[in-house]
Image 1 (spheres, one colour):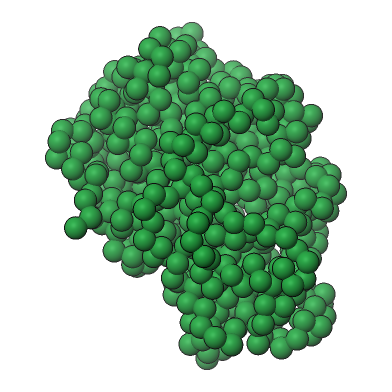
Image 2 (cartoon, helix red, strand yellow):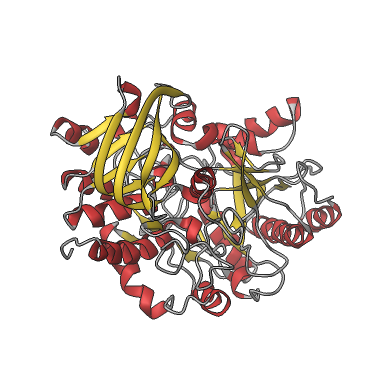
Length: 533
């Protein structure tokens, strides 16, 4: 029987509370309050708690653990994702997958773990004045978190879905590599996106958050932070939150007031800007929520002559950065090639067509392969990203325009992926676009892709990587926080998550967040008087 370390910890006395059960208002007084429990919040919590500081974590989503993970999309999407895995940009053109439970997106991601690419760090230094973001300076922090989370190249053979990318890329002369994954004792099930039922994924849910709780931290789930409070001198002094009901969506009527010496904002690259906007903190240059980036993703599907069973085995184990490496950062947009898992709901909601046409596609699911291209946005002046805004009820929405610069990359990426799939032996290729049909040769597919109208809601675009919106930089006029995550305008307030990235990074972001935050949180622990970790 697989043990559930979270259930065991709660039974052993962890201070972990579900705010939906509160029958009265709560007040807390701590050294640091952390808003969010994902890669940034979880890493921060462990470091501060191990330093002997009093830590409180607030999480909007529920506390689910391996006992709750049954590898069912119908359970996981409503409970573990923002907006039931249906979060979209303001114009509905892009579907965004983001976590919404204890552990954040680390609970539901596909485990791919890359260091921040050197070209990205160089761009941040040159463009944003982040002089200490060098490959050499960051290497010890990446190494520290790689050891902590057991990050290593996947040693097992890739599943067939990933092997198709590997074989096809080799045949057309495109190099590919093995993806490092943060797993330990992985059962190779393929259901990482629904929460790991064996606790093999080394997410914040089973690593840093249990460590923080074992060191006395407090965790409150189903608690939505409304605003950051400030004292008479204009310094962050805590937060005001509301308890949510058992469904996790509506306020229960109970309030949560936290007084803290320091506030750490780690609610993700849509949630963190939203908290700042709701708090109406000083923003003299109008930077909060601006330059939010997505890695816009386009999809190419193929039918293979033998079963692929893309729902089984490590979801992502092979990648290619070739089309990033040959693309100058200030030129046409580059893209990273990876493979997603294929589960019924995920496939059905992202593949084109309606009625009989769509049913025919789904009937061939065991033979389907899918490759995705993640476009690196934010490096060129033609790629300004999007803006996080607040709706009338205070909830956030991302306004993100898809322009000719991105559409050019999308068209090139669809062509590349079709070529690779045919080279790997595909019987037909279906670029995921509403005007597409299945093509039986690369020449036919290439001609069709060249003629597609690249427009929103016709070309399918998705993303699981949201970055920016509270961008860091040396200059307050063009950034929200400095290179250590400290807010330029408000003392005692730090942003420790992917919202601090000044661009997208051109790689799956979790390890970049871990490395950046482990460095910055360690400095914060010292500043708050914690003992050395």
